[in-house]
Every structure is written in C-alpha cells, then in structure tokens.
View 1 (cartoon, rainbow, N blue to C red):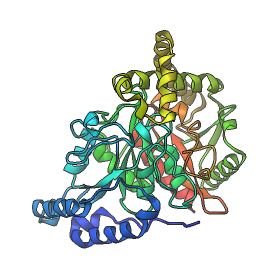
View 2: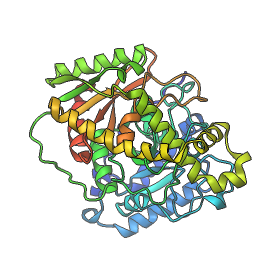
View 3: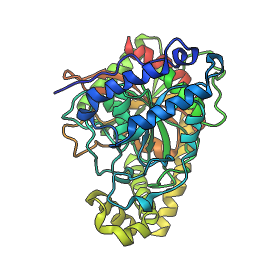
View 4: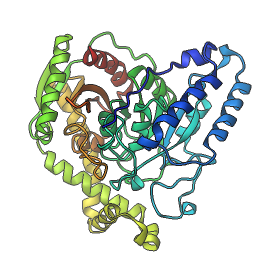
Length: 432
C-alpha cells in the first residue's frame, strides 16, 4: 500500500500578492505531477501538457503584471472532469465513441474559472459518461482501493496536491462520495446553481456541477467564482442546529460507516454544536427506486442517437443502464421528475418542524472499497441529489489503515452560501 497526502495547499494570496512567483509555483506542481501521477492516474494523458501550461502561465503573467490587479484565482491550476468541454482539449468521457461525436462549446463554468485567473492543468479521469464503468484512477491514500466515482480523477488530483481546485459532476453521488474516499472537500450546489451548459449530460433532471478543494476556505473561494451571484459573507451570527436523519436511510451505511459517523457526531457535540435527531427519509427505498429509474430513463433518452450507432462501443455497465432506461414508462418518468420537488419540500418542512439548520449524514456507506473495478455505492448521497439540495463533504476520520471517511452536510435548497459558511466551523471541529 502506498499513501500520498496532499501537501499544505498554496494560497492564492501569495500568487496574487507577488510573494510567490507563478513560474516557480508551476514548477513545483510539475515535480509533484512527475512523482505521483504514474501511480494515481488522475489525469487524461496529454502529449504537450507542459508546453500548453507554459503558454497559459506566460499569458497570465503578461496580462496581470501588477500584483494589485490580479483576479481571485490568479495562477491556480484546475483539473476538469472529462465530460466538460474545454477549448483546445478533446472530450472523451472515458468512452470508445469517436471524439468528433462529443464536441461542443466550452462550459461556462470553465470560462468563469479561467476569467478569474485559473489555468487548466488537464482533463481528469471520469467513469464512462459519468456512470459506473471505471477508469484507471486509484485512491491516493491506498492505491489498491477505489477513489470513488464518477469524478474519480478530480478527487484524486486534489488529494495528491496536483491542483487545489477541480471540477466534477454529480448525478447520484459522484462528488460527495469520491471526496470522502479521498479525504478532500467536495461541494454539490443546489440544482442548476452552476449552469450545466458545455457538460455531457447523464440525466439532465438531476445532473449537478460540483467542485473539489483541499479545504473549506478554498471551496468558498472557488464557489464564489463558479456560482453566479454568490454572497461571500452570509448574514449569520450563530452556530447551526444539526439534524440527524434517523430511520432506514442511516441503516444503509455499513457498521464501520455508522461507527465513524457516531465519532463525528461526538466530536461536534464536544465542540458545542446542538444535535437533534429527527425521523427522515423513511420511504428511502421508494426514493432510491424513483431516482434510479429517472437516471436510467434520461440516460436512454440522452444517448439514443449515439447508442443506436455505437452501441457496441459502450461499457457493459452503461449498456445495462440504457437498456433499463428504455423500459421505463413515460408516466413513471414524469412521476420521478415530480418527485424531486415533493422530496425537496418535505425536507424543508422537516427542517422547520424540528428547528434544524443542516442535516449531517455519512458521506458514503463506509471507507473506500478495495479494488478499482467498483467505485462504491452512492446510496447515502442519492436522496439529497434527487431533491437538488446543496451538500458538502468534509474530512472526518480515518480507518486504522489510513482510509478517510467524510461527513456529509446538507442545507435547504438555495442555502449554498450558508452551507459553506457553517461547514468551515464543522470541519475545524472534526479536525481537532
């Protein structure tokens, strides 16, 4: 077993302020890349990566010669999940389809990050079309274990210190789960808070654009750029009341996952947080089935033309999804889409009834499973994704062999700023 830990993240303040030279910083990233990437496989191979990066760095230095005029993400290398379109880089989505079929205009969220001074270090590995067929990425904390998926490469790239910010997506649990497995921070905003334009769809009704960073302050900075109309300082002057969703939802976690979850709750209580238990998601089996039918049906619709022509090039996992989706009745799809709003409203009602500001739950059933053929079960993330409410995972604890487990924190729909504001204190409490 080989374990890589992310180095202390570089602050953009040093780059913006001129106390850290951008060229020298990129050289440290390249040295780190050369030392770990062959083991972790977070990025898509690229023959001219460093000449492209050098060109981007030269452009940044010429455009922003004065430290006082540099934008918030000046000199920040980013990883971009390979379902996002990026000018000058092909989109392959870990598939065997011709890249010419997968073209499109650059994703606006990529443009927003670049306009804020970032540069693209490279495309990161995804499972095929952001579903379950895995790529070669390994968990930086335990190379014989999965990093999670589908945003496998983005989570691993941030965890290894190759980039402090990466883009991912979540349709079931593809940001929150790999962030937990890799010991980093993952944020899935409210549905449609970040535009999905320029991103290959899996299931448009529940696809979310998300972010990975090494800590919550970094996430707040990245979210302020990626999310339109972000309020950097929400008007909050108290600690949140935390809700524990009792019932069959929590029973989906493993014994190990529930034990570490109890430790996380104990740490939060010791730090002074009020925690209230509340029955929630008691119909979780119905929610799971509804969400899975929705994803399958919309994947079948979205891939209909490609699948008709290139069906023999799809991985078995994706074939099974599409074939299942073709059997979902139109009435069932309509019911599943309506169910998103119904669940969102019931979560808001429960928060009001019990006086809860945030829900806290396991970010995955347990630590990362062994092997890289299975990216793990997203069941702990599914209901929050179905409802489209914002969620963030923060590092919580580790197993005896060093595999991380994260705590998933969930807010009411549209309360993204409050979620990340409060998450900073919760993350500090868990790290003490």
